[in-house]
Image (cartoon, rainbow, N blue to C red; front, side, top):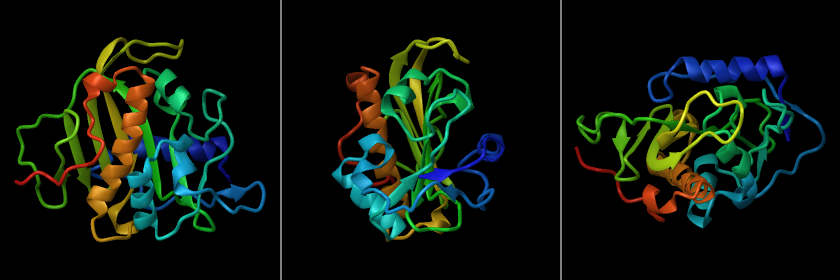
Length: 231
């Protein structure tokens, strides 16, 4: 498990917040993570609280070029473990950014201190307009949820999921949608279809969140990610 100090974690999280994931972002980590003990990592299917199905696990292996992974250790601003928890992610959908349960995935044995990807979920009242062209330059749209886009610095997936605050850290009231947000820079990924593989991972985790939040039917997220939409 990787450890980061509270100050370093807050700085990195605020950097992701300050610049939209598909437009900018922080391309170099904020420092090397410390290890609490010798690490052998876990399989792709067990990372992020087991929310990656077989297709997503295979996609993560292609993106990373490895089959063993670590998560961030320590605790977040809510005093809860940084290691991703499906139940905590659902609980804090309406919470403040730094109190949401996020999955920080590192390649086991990677000494750079930079996560391969970060995924987190939040309740939202709206989603981006679908009026623009489906695929423009290095941004690719997918027919998933109500809006799904992969770009140079990550991927976003919005799906219908009516929820109400379930904890006392709510930053937003009742909403109709959930945003699944992945920070994962394309130039750090491997494979022949980086955009789709990132969306496969994000979609699998989103399906798990939808099930946990009791909105599987309204979310209507497909089990398999279709090909990108044409321009």
